[in-house]
Amino acid sequence: MTPALALDDVGFGFPGRKVLEGVSFAIAPGEFVVVLGPSGGGKSTLLRLVAGLLEPSSGQLRIAGAEVRGPRRDVGMVFQKPTLLPWRTALDNVLLPAGFSRGASATERARAQELLAAVGLPDAASLYPAQLSGGMAQRVGLARMLLHDPDLLLLDEPFAALDAMTRERMTLLLQELWLSRPRAALFVTHSIPEALLLADRVIVLAGRPGRIQVDWRVDLPRPRRPETMADPAFNEMALALRREFDLVAA
Amino acid sequence: MTRLFPPLVTLVLILGAWQFATGPGGLPSYLLPAPWPVAWAIWDGLVGGAFWPHLGFTLTATLTGFAIGSVSAILVGALVAESRLFERFVYPYLVAIQAMPKVALAPLILVWFGFGLASKVVLVALICFFPLLVNTITGIRGADRDLVEMARSFSRSPAFVFLHVKLPAAAPGIMAGLQIGIVLALIGAIVGEFVASDRGVGYLIGSATVNMNVTAMFAGVLVLAAVGMAGSAIIRALHRRVVFWEADPRLPPPSEG
Ligand SMILES: Nc1ncnc2c1ncn2[C@@H]1O[C@H](COP(=O)(O)OP(=O)(O)O)[C@@H](O)[C@H]1O
Ligand SMILES: [Mg+2]
Image (cartoon, rainbow over all chains, first blue to last red; front, top):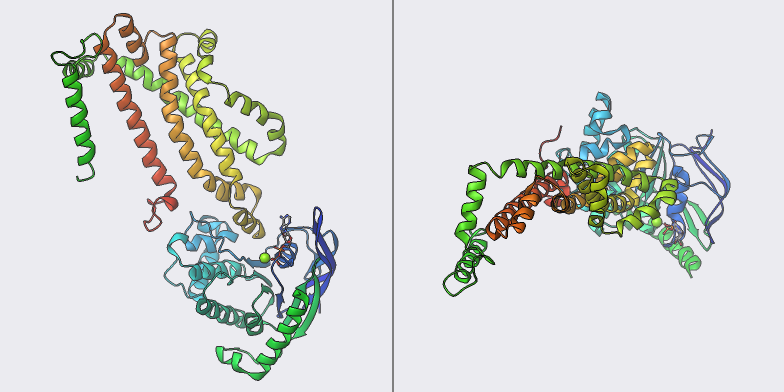
């Protein structure tokens, strides 16, 4: 089967600074992969390459078998900051990939409403971003990512700025959305518990330039719940990751 | 009501001081006219109709020049902000012209465009062009890069990104530029009328100077002050409407078309 995403020996550098080197991995359709790594390790750069916002200096990226040449409609992204347009309503922000309410089809408009309900904001359609809390704003971001029902999800530390409780709730919401239609996902974080609540596979990206240090399967049953964090298997894995992480971060 | 009270007290005090200064033993009326003759001169000019053609001329010059200068500033600003090439070839000259006091060009502009309305419009347009140009460029350039990248990641075209991300991001700066521009526009029109004109409030003040008619000068200046304040207030109201997401985030915007 063609992987949903395949990276082959990908390298990238900004002028005078190598950020990624020899990065190779593949994500199967329906597989949830979490990338763990220290700050400045090149995680956002990796996602930008996959999103077609940057071009690799070496190597190849393929989405569904086709080389990445720019942003694609079948890829949806969520960013660390909410990145909502302050001058547009929540509904219009969800509809941005379709050109706002005006440019969207009736189907897209209906789907945007459904998605707002699915992320727990059934009544927020006409609210402006300034009227939303950080958690609500990221819910809108999740809905926007899903508008065109993408086959590949890219999430760049989407919950890092939220308080611990909200963060856990959002993590479980994301799992729920994903379980309703499993698809390939590349999720960046530096929280080990968050990684283990979501991942089918965890990749540790570290070093200067960043390389893949660890690529492990996570075989915990789904749906994972807050109680999953008390599971011995969960703790064992968390500790092992912790050790790897400290090793490479040192 | 309570908001209006303090400035009203100040106004009454100023008028009182003014009246006192022009009273017995005070300044002679050929230096400082008393408040009442000035108020009368304004009333007479407005009701008697003598002011209106001049006010109309000044307003036409101000608003036409302001419109032309502002629209071109936003267009050129957008070009400079979006095009490297345009920036490299043209921007240095724009900066050089910006540093020059535009009113110094007034006599030249009058020679080129005649003593009528056209020269005033050109001067006004030139004067309010630059502050708005700079604000437009910094506003568009200053658009949140994360927002721009987000829109690009969802396959939005460069035109969409410009129209729906960069331009709204520049709106507060553009509105501030318009705010500066409207005040400068009025100055430009008056300077133009001072230099050479047979109409306009600037001309009225100028000819009153020749006759040493201080009362008429005061009347003209106060009318201009009112016009300037009205212009500023209109732009401020417009600002709140256009940039609703910055004014008071809890308030919904005015209904959108
Ligand atoms: N636009 C840029 N120009 C130059 N260097 C950059 C740019 N963006 C990121 N970097 C550098 O690349 C490295 C990796 O950044 P990033 O991918 O954002 O890391 P992470 O997301 O893992 O924190 C950092 O050292 C950062 O300073
Ligand atoms: Mg990052």
